[in-house]
Image (cartoon, rainbow over all chains, first blue to last red; front, side, top):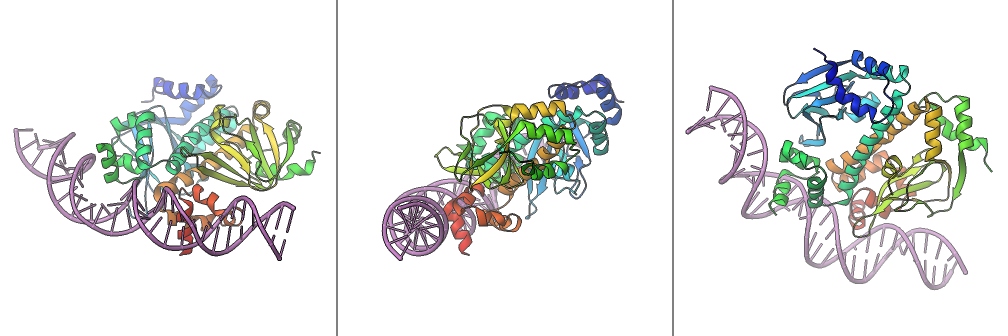
Length: 193
Length: 193
DNA sequence: TTCATTTTGTGACATTTGTCAAAAGCTGGG
DNA sequence: CCCAGCTTTTGACAAATGTCACAAAATGAA
């Protein structure tokens, strides 16, 4: 089932971050799996530990949680060639308050955390790649926090159109509204203008 | 001027993240400096590149930027035993939109980015420490973004009292208000109740 | 202590955003 | 093609938060 070509995308992403010797590539392949999920299936539920990292070969996912009124709040949308974890749970090993769900039929490479740790240990240079990728996702996250602090609902929507237009094609507006930190109705009214 | 004892705090923080051999400790000392800043001095201004990482031995700083109306917006407050950079600028090497300013007289260990990269290169296990620290700060940042999306102004203030009460002792309310993403006046009214 | 400066609090009002209920629009399976 | 179920839009109104102007309080230097 596993096909070496499935890994080409992953290797390209990793190679941009640092040295990726063949021995490390082989170790990644032999420690991971390729899995398929249908649309609206869960990779992770609330209360579980996020013990796997997913690389999206194709498809899309959302990382979300239920706020105190039980309303879905989306914190991330991720697409092909991106990595998915529940940041808090994965890094702290504590149960997740978030869940992860596919938005489309999707194919992933999945690597268990203990295997990842094993790779970090046995291929010390792999820590460079891990560090750089963490930095990149961190920057994206910070941009989100700043945007929420700094801009009005309308401005946040305009920024999204500018910087992440593909979201609008692939994600429903109600999902986007909670990502922007506003209500469904407010987003609808912003768009009307 | 540089005293080996100045580094004890830093070494403790690093040691919690991973192996810190003596040779690496020595390399850190010989590649960094200890510097003092008075209250309200700038470590970094807008437009400059954040090319140094600061470890706070004592004191406090804020990371801030001016929003489009020219109003200060604070994104981070950092205290002793914490590390300070302008995340975006430091990781991307692009000019910073943020500035970094001391809130109190402060003492730092300062390490230039090129020296840090040299350390990462020559002590590969140092990447483990760097990766883990990046993960920790990432988690904190994500908690901020979620809080801004999920909670009302009042709730965000209550969370701050619960989780970071020391901020109230050391930081002015007007600085805290922009950190919480609300106006000075609204924070004042929330507090009255 | 005194006074200038900075920070914080208040009132009145404007604006933004949320909430609830219902209508309209869209979509995929049969 | 049609309908059930989902998503989006709309209206009316409520609540939260912002803005401006100014007053009060706190702070710090002389």
